Image 1 (tube, rainbow, N blue to C red):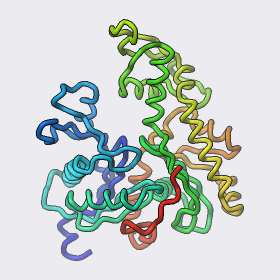
Image 2: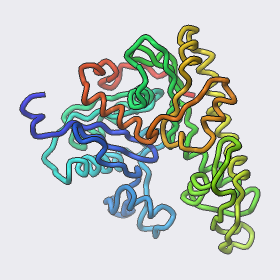
Image 3: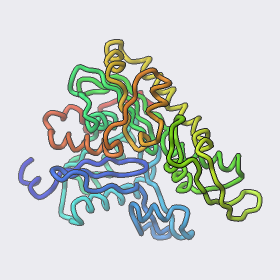
Length: 349
C-alpha cells in the first residue's frame, strides 16, 4: 500500500452495540471492549471508555452519564461514537497518535445509506485514511470458516447485542438476508420486564444480563446452576431486596424475543433458492456472536427448523477474525467490501 502504510497498521473494527473489537493486521485481535463511554454531562468530555465506563452504568451521579453510542447496530450518538472510535484506534496502535490506517468496519446488512455514511464519517474523523465497509454476516461467515467464495450455499446467524443478522451467502455475496433488531439487549430487557411483572422487583441492565449468562437458556438443557440470587428494588416497598430466581423463569422470560428471531430464520429459509436450501440442509446453520453462547440456542433453532444448527468456534470473535482474514487476503476478499453506499436497504426485519 505504499510508503504511507509502512508507518501505519491496517485494522478491522467489529463495531457492535454491546462490544467493539479491533483486529490489527499481522497482530490479531488487540482490543475487545464494551461500546460504552462515560461522559461529563456539562462539558461533554469523556471520562472513561470501555469496561471502565460499563462499570458505571446505573451507578453514576447526575453529572456523569454512561452512554452506549450505538443502538440496534448503528450509530445513535455521532459525537460520542467518534470519540470512542478515536480512543479505541489509538489503543489498538499501542497508544500512538501518529497513525493513519486503512480501516475495514463491519455493519449490519440492513442499514440505511445515512447510517452507512455515519459510520464512515466517524471512522474518517477518528483518523482513518481510508474506510471500507463489510456486512456483518459476510465477516462472520468468513471468520467461521464458511466457503463464502464458492458456489455453495451457507447460512449464518450472527446474534449480537443490538441486532441479529440472518443471511444465506454464496460466491462472496449475500443472496438473501434479514436484519432483526431483536438480540442480546432485548433478551436482557425481557428478563427485567419479567422480574418487574412477576416478582415486583426492579433490576438493572447489568443484573438482568448476569441472570442470562448464569442461568439463562433458550431450550430445556442441563445447567450447572438451577437458581441464582438477584438484587434489586422492590416495587411496592421501595426497599432493596434479594430474590432467588429459577432457570426456568429466565428461559420463560426470553421466549418472546427468541420467538421473533426464530420466525425470522424461517422467513429467510422460505426465501432461499432451492439449490442453496439443499446445501444448507446438508451443511447446517452456523451461529456466531455473543448470543450463540446462550445455552440451548442451537437446540432451539434445530428443533424449530429441522436443520442442524452449529455454534462456530470462538463465536464472540468471528466477525473480527473474518475482517482480519479480509485484511490478510485483501485481493481474495476485496469484492466483499463496499465503499459505503452501493447496497440498497431491503433487508430490515
